[in-house]
Image 1: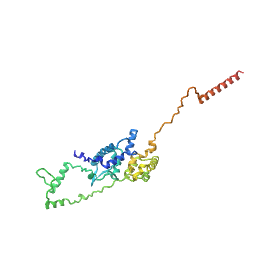
Image 2: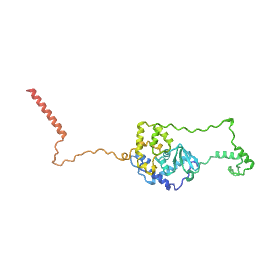
Image 3: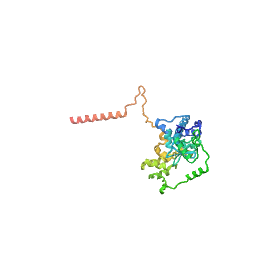
Image 4: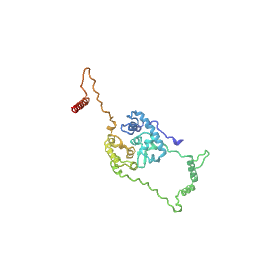
Length: 323
């Protein structure tokens, strides 16, 4: 049960980075606002305090999951094969991973996601070893005379090591040659997937050059044809000049893999997405005052004249035949 717990600060709700994440999520053009607009067919109306509470809940879920799935590198936590989109799914909040990256609590790299100073700043100790692992280490230390068992059953108390035991331990730590002359083969690095024929042009046009392997994988999964790729370039040309992408030196530009996975080239421009389409006005004539006549309807009068002309022609034909 101890492995299921994670330490949290009581003042986390008032942390400046939590407030910064809440402001990032509440942006009008952010992932969360677009998700709410598409789901509820209306603009997002959430107070800042509620968003901060949602951020704290999302951090508990993200830190708890990544602590079990990641690897400790010094004080940092490295989670391989992970991206900011995965953090969105863990927290169940669209744009949560990008908000963590914006305040420095997460860094998306080619190897995965890094949580800087996770074990130092967040006071989260690594998972304790099981009883079987402690017994294994005790037997190894006991073999070389490092520990002894006292009357209370302590199996980890260090004792003085004599010169003879120290010598024997140094000899046992000397690496032995491989048996039978077999040499361990080096592990080869995974070969990256082949780039799509349009990826080079996409990478040149995209303003943020981050996590290229993840972008190659996402682009190959979409496999855009010529028409789709043209739509991508047109959307990039429009979005790179938008206020959200231009402010703060491009801080809010999404990562290439995120842009591709979320099909952001299909986003509508702000003027198209926010302008309602109204039906054409219907003309209603004003009521006629008492005793006022505007005359016959032109269309009805034309039909009446055509009928009258047809009757006159028919009468003239009958007279001709009778005569």
